[in-house]
Image (tube, rainbow, N blue to C red; front, side, top):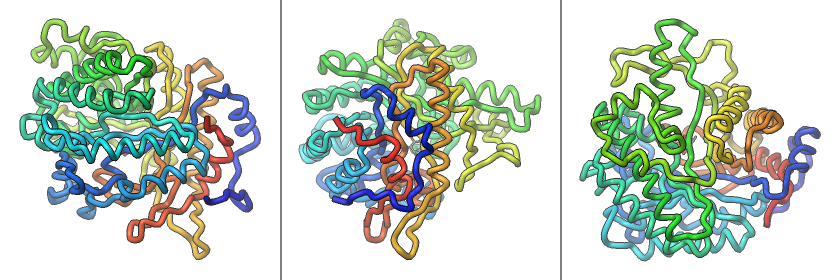
Length: 458
Ligand code: FCB
């Protein structure tokens, strides 16, 4: 196993390291991944196609025509990847299960090889002293269900509940931490309104129906997990990023307000407060049946926050909802891939989530994309990521000091991976992956994170 030496590596600032050491022992330091982004083996051992396999075949659907066919080949290299996590010293591993690997047609016939694969991942994770956090849905809907209407079809909530039950029965003896969905608003908005993700549909009605049915699926999933995994700790992951009107201009304010509802409120509000935000409520009403809000608003144990930076909105009458993605102010700091670096917004989101929903929070994604590569000696220096992580963890510390109810933090991501529509361009990993050879190399940020968190394994 690789030994970590800190010689000439960036080290966490002393005050931050002392604070990290002072946290209660059950504060969770982890890393996150998702199935389609790392597994590869897209057509191996009986896996069925997902909407992302098809998206990758649409001309212009993904940068460079990249696909997740091989990705990090984690399907075959999971043991090495779990060993890397052990080397870094994380206490928790958040991963997702691929629905079409378990149910190639989304429902009906089960693929035993798929079930076995996650048995191996879970067992190896536990053997490494790392707690598995299982996410049921990270965007890879089986294509067979999309062919029936996907999330725009109300029955999709029931198909999801059956899939959740399959996972609960199979893995519930070993997995305590369950996540119903990752980033509801991203995959519904970019899948059904602004065509940046699978299934690439542009349709207001389908978008509204998808919002509502995904919320129903979440509620049904919580009920299934409660019934089948008595000790389960259940959460859902929401992305929240403050929406800023481009240039602060009056003509962009309405766009920002509507995007804020779609992006930040359309899922956690009904799930945790029992109602949609006002503009969504008015539009979605024809798709809501009696009793639905109670089906959606089921008690969870915690929520996950995924956060990178603020987003900017502008009026754009050519789009589905009249809003478009605006630009950050020209002088704002950004990292390699152009996303704004604004740690105060992260601090504020943590405080706002605590105030608004009053449930414990885990930061389930935060991280920095870049174009890292090994130098002549094989070292991967990524000072931008070290700086980003230290600024954002410092902001989390400020939020916690001000009362934010935060219980853990997961870096996105363990590995460089398939970054959806951006293909293999942006690298978010603590571990560099050479996609030609599948060689893994710990980046400086991995050493930095390891030093910050100490060895937190149980
Ligand atoms: C989040 C996704 C994750 C990854 C990061 C960079 O929106 O949940 O899969 O793509 O962004």
